[in-house]
Length: 427
Image (cartoon, rainbow, N blue to C red):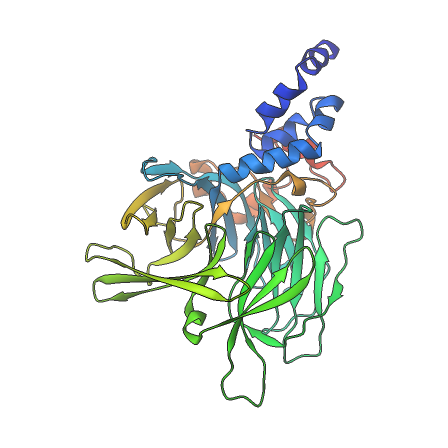
């Protein structure tokens, strides 16, 4: 054992850093257990920043499949050019069985945020939960009083490498807006001031450390309200507002090559029409507008497909709403006016699909102080290994739930067990 550690520790540090920056986060967590020297090297800020940079260069599409109380997490490579393969295989990450308090969720820089998830067998026992699907780790956030008009969002500050959860209280209530920083020693909700009372109309998008979402100023006396885009700087925790035209409210917010954009689409007979707005100047509130049409051979329709987002090279991604055989993701290139499809293998069954583009791995959140396997004993049953086909036909959900507390060598998983010990035992 000592000789092996000496050999491993004799490998040049630069070589170790270069090799490990190209590996999945799950593998990096395992190699941190090799020796104290490797653990120290793979936790250095330089390595973490390098790993994140490499992750952004190989983004993935995250698929979250929901069938009743069953949630399954997969991801597949995101093609980087029009000549990539016509099919890819989705990697299975984990599965859990639990009733969500809300189907609303957010994905930002490698984390999935559930604003309200049932964390015990009691229906009323719900709390915000943050999940890292690549490692299977969870964190339960302090509870908040919520109503159907309140919203919460997950943002990421790339300068300080921090994730924050923004809670916007309902304009009809007396609750205060709040914010919480993940990974702090004493996580708690802090009061936040916002000068504009508003209704929220859309899901958020985080671009370069700024959270954006659509809203309308709240005014009981006004018959109609103007519409704005709320801009929340995650680092400074300050709000700004961008005025928009009324027809923009039907757009889905997108990240178009680092700029905020909106996209809407509709079928006009056999023709598919896409409308895209791009914010060219934040200070002057100047937008550019583009309209694209796909001919009669377009296979996309709003009933069976939805817009996932936009890739870094500007391709608009569409996904099927339900898994099926075969299951396809479509890429539309506005500049070339071409539509191509990529077959995603390993997504089976008739399940509802949530999909998110540009999913990356971030080692800043791959730490036991921030994310703990704390839900397994509190009602959330986690499975990290894909069941074999023959086991699927004969294994009940109760049997699968009981198997969530074991790993490769049938060693019990306890709350005090270090996360990296868990990862080292995973297949």
